[in-house]
Length: 281
Image (cartoon, rainbow, N blue to C red):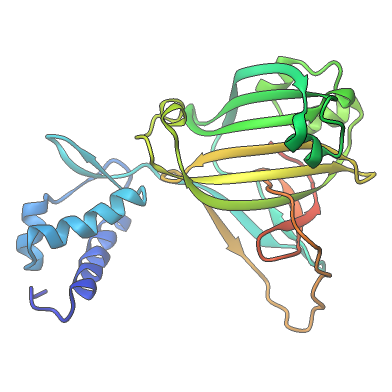
């Protein structure tokens, strides 16, 4: 590769592709050649190489360790969405890895105006608020903030929030049968407090998930918003496209987000997805 390749952007893109090929041919934790060695091999300047490498570091594919060099980053946790069979649905198999939770806060207080509107209840009515750190194979992956109608779960325990499937607990222990949820996902960055919990630098890229879950009668049960590490988490869609299939009816507005779990959900409008929940984390 020559330094005078046409266009600085194209040059950086070709360097990025070369380094990305190195990453994809190695295993997590493996070293890649030094910046000096790569500059010599590719015939590019240090700033050109560093710009390309910085993109891969920001994307969570490479890790720089001061005084040691560059290494392939840990493998990302993947949540796959696949098309349903014979229905306008998508199914989400369980995300990879062994998931667990660490309870950060568990309390009851009035819903307030915003959460009350989402859960269609009085601002003075009580909700159970739960903050929990979600871990995969022991590593922090996400922070979840759950708001659940207190009248539906008067005996909800901390143990249910730390172990097992929450929706399974709601069904078996509290008689709450969740059926439908609506999702929104958007990019964000972590705050200083979130960075400390997730063990990432402040302002690191992240994914914001929001969810409104309803039961079999259409009554809202919980509102959740979660922040997932952008360097370790990704969503992959596998779709079956059928031009002859009728499009589902559009709905006005949307309620935010379904996080990872075993969901089946129906696509509604561009920014949200709706459907039947099979199970959830």
